[in-house]
Amino acid sequence: MQAQTVSQKMKEAKDFLPINGTDHIEFYVGNAKQAAHFYKTAFGFQSLAYAGPETGVRDHVSYVLQQGKIRLVLTTPLNSNSPITEHIAKHGDGVKILALWVDDAYKAFEETTSRGGKVYMEPKTIKDENGEVRMSGIYTYGETVHLFLERKNYNGIFMPGYKEWKSSYAPADAGLLYVDHCVGNVGWNRMNPTIQWYEEVMGFVNILSFDDTQINTEYSALMSKVMSNGNGYVKFPINEPAEGKKKSQIEEYLDYYEGEGVQHIAIATADIVKTVRDLKSRGVEFLDAPPKAYYDDLINRVGKIDEDIAPLQELGILVDCDEEGYLLQLFTKPVEDRPTLFFEIIQRKGAQSFGAGNFKALFESIEREQAKRGNL
Image (cartoon, rainbow, N blue to C red):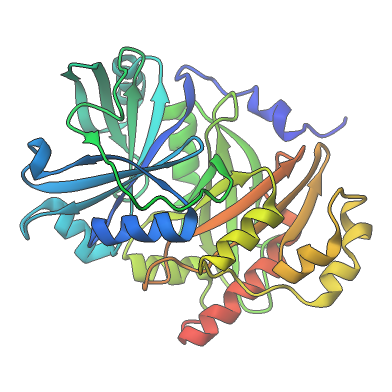
């Protein structure tokens, strides 16, 4: 019997929780004003909306940035006794909320909490002159949250409580289109309970699994399973450390983030060579390129591709394939001082998988960075 493709496996999701995509990703950061400048300058995000004392919010500020269908919300507390302050003190800058765009935020809450979801936000409706947004939320791994947002009756810039953020500083975008997937790191022996949670509470399906025999180097290993909703618009790979000779990248993350959390955000582009070249020119740092042999063997490994190999090799872009096509990907170095959160730039040419053939080259590159930090 022929193995199922990733697309076929997605159709097995229970899908009692229809999701239209990622609404936004909210970061808790030490200085939102400066972080916003970084994401505009380095990644080409545009100013969209703002909330703070000027809009009636007394305890925090939030800057909203947009590029393509991606919205980032950068939030900073305005006093030391805020739970946001506690979050930043423990974890450093990082992702707090993975907000999901749904048709019915109240029903999403009922469906998930009745199946064991832990309440983060009771259903509520917020309104202004542009209409209403309905929202609710539950916790997932660590202190990370899934917020359910229903926008069909809202025509404003972002949501009530925000005003348009006008800025004369507007760098060109970098060709980033939408959130492809968000990866979470969980602790030892926490993989299976987390996967079970996504299946039972969210109705997701496990579309890919990799164990420590597939994801390993000379020194370290990890396990990964990919969870997806039925339409594939929202995918959450989950990583767990595995035993190895030295400390794995997942262990390093857990040590420095001081708990489970979002490891990286993968963002799609239609031209990875152009996007990566642009990002590098803006100062975004990427992992080192794999050795020349990786590119010498590339066509034998993945078959014919549309792109010239020379620029891929120059930029260190990785290529992998599955039964449905191929993909190109490249990973940044961590974007904070703690070696925690980073970004992936991905271009899919049919492939729905996650670059299993690149794992060894990728993790050896990550280990070289770990070694520089004295954490391998």
